[in-house]
Length: 334
Image 1 (cartoon, helix red, strand yellow):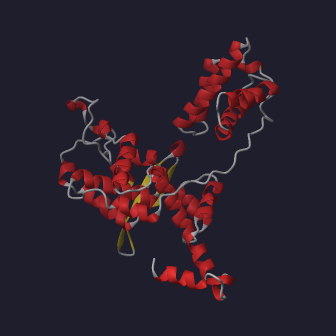
Image 2 (cartoon, one colour):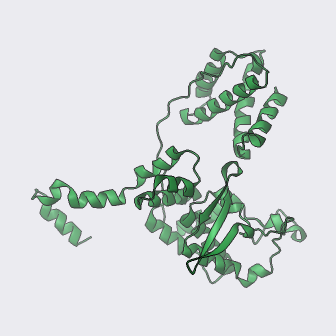
């Protein structure tokens, strides 16, 4: 059964273009399924529809798996058996009608705009690490990159081009499933990245890769690597380091902990695109979403413009109410 699962995971990565993280997650679910049926003396290829429904439902519920997590489990099981049937391992697909558990829509929590401003002002740009950190934060906030895509950036992924006499920086990023996209960066991000690349301390760091490119955002210390090997790929900043950096700066600025993670900045990016009425297809491209439904979530979060319109146009703003005088007083003295 292990070999069968490994063959399917290879298919996911190499034929379907799924990310290594997805393959690892699906592999974990399928091995739990294999272990469960093995204890009963069965085999993956002999399971019935009822068996699969019991495992993905009651069994996983008792193990504490939430409905949202079980949706990924069902996707893994359905994908595996569809593949097994296409390869001739089974004649009928027992998972074809396997239901997905119902899970409520969980809206993401974006970082507030004023908190993003506070966060960006925290790094000490008189130091090399401060300039580096400010550049990293500006990419996360101004471009909405996933942290995996940011950490994987090399200097060759930055394209500086002239548009109508103005320099723009285009970021080539590879994120989920190694899908590549080109993303124009704000001028503020371009200037901070330029300052980082031009810093004299960066000149003395060996960040060259075997393909001739150079790691973009570098680590200044790594106790797990011998000094003579601390170069090239070993210089690349880890995701955990960036997450810790965000928390450190955010707590110093008094920002709520729930907003102190890279995806909160990505949510802010998506929300602001929706606030400015950017076309849905353009937003989908900028966010790197395969499914437009993922992009539509940010429309629910875009409330600033709606509240402004409501405040001016609603009927109560045009008539006298028992609290009209109080409201005017509060608006004069915030």
